[in-house]
Figure (tube, rainbow, N blue to C red):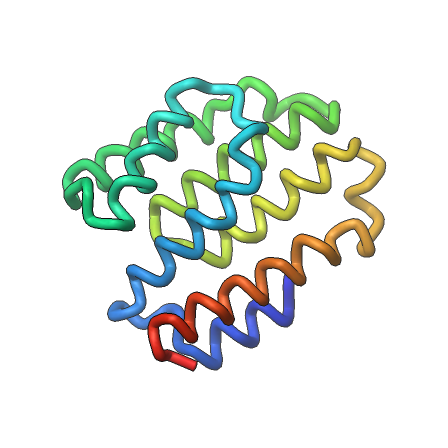
Length: 152
């Protein structure tokens, strides 16, 4: 949905296996902006694992286990059937964490943006301009991370 982010990701080859550290760091940055919307304590525990993994303070088996756990949590989130904006914000935030831990940075960014906008209220999701601030932040953050890694 964030076309500028998708173009930047393509330009820097974000999907390249060698860029996994960048994908994880960017996914973590995106979900950190919506972690206050998480409702499941176990989702926060999984987020803590990737937060430790990115700087090298957790190992791959811990990341893999947390990734599997958050995927199950996201898939069974009790707010999934709700039409309430705040419930959808929690669901989207949980899916953002699941995608971040799986190394799916663009998907994590997308869910994080939805979580942000859903938190305004369900009505906001149909207003494209409601996404502009988050989308702009995502592009600038990925650009900055890529520069730090000497990819740009």
